[in-house]
Image (cartoon, rainbow, N blue to C red; front, side, top):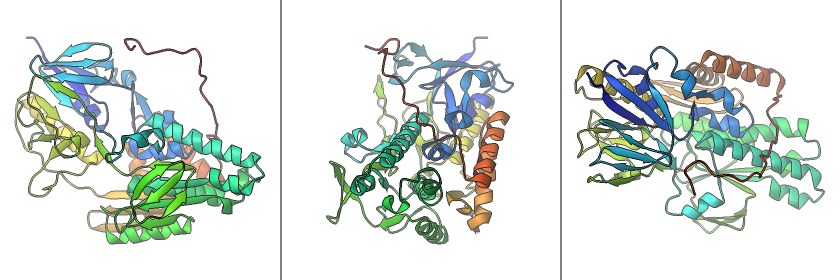
Length: 425
């Protein structure tokens, strides 16, 4: 019998878990991703702060494809540009692929809330490459500040503003605070830590708005302990010529703005069918993750908008939602069933710094050292590959015991020779 062709767009938590669980005897499975590796986004902030190298939290798809549950699937490198619903085709910059069933698990990208020009001026950490770019800029500013004798220039170089008080923003601001408190005096003797300013801006009236009040209060306390200036109930109105203007008219200088304020679904050009992305550029799906108005296209994870009584505004955009949806969809496709999805909330957590974290776990609220150990354990077991787990653990133990890391390397890529990727003009 000819196998049914299933094409999966995106190799994140949802896409990779789906590939693992689909029955390769029934389906011809192809995974398409713009990178040739799977990464672990919850730890991107540690790449940006020189705590981990990208290889420690990344895993090549082709190596994974050789293993038991994934063996039999194929990987194609490419960024999906358009989807032809009528012809059942997807188009990347390299090729056209036919499908019988399409699963969109491409995730999200940065949301600049109607100001796309910000992408040219702020630093983001939604991907491993963006986190590396952010790391290089931080290190470059530290090196330049070490060379100048102009204190005002030092302060300008070392003025950081983090936009967004969610888990990522809190973790980035906390990592910068640890750098100010523990690293600068040890490794950059020509810099006075007092010349480093770190400001966290949050539009709501508290940080970690989706977590408990206890977690929010403790996170704020920990950030202040790390010398981070937190401004809640403030929105950034504009950023021009290194001047951040707030909604109340306040202006502040920022040498580097790190944007973690929001996400929006990856954009696709869709032809041959009436599929209109819903709020947040997400695909509206039913309880089986089938995109509404179609019978052969599914959406999983952050890019899927699934609403039901418990979540009238949609399931949260969390890794656990993506993983659970992928498991159920694989079971449904394998068995020809249409079981409906119900999200089982396992809690949420965020780390602020060394021995400082918060966790909301099924009616149990943890803070401080206990939450920090829990955070480390959960993230460690979630990373793919034993080698990666061991590497991350060794890095964490070494950094904890010595306050040192060998990862503060400023390696600029060379400009020449100029090239374009195959198939691009």
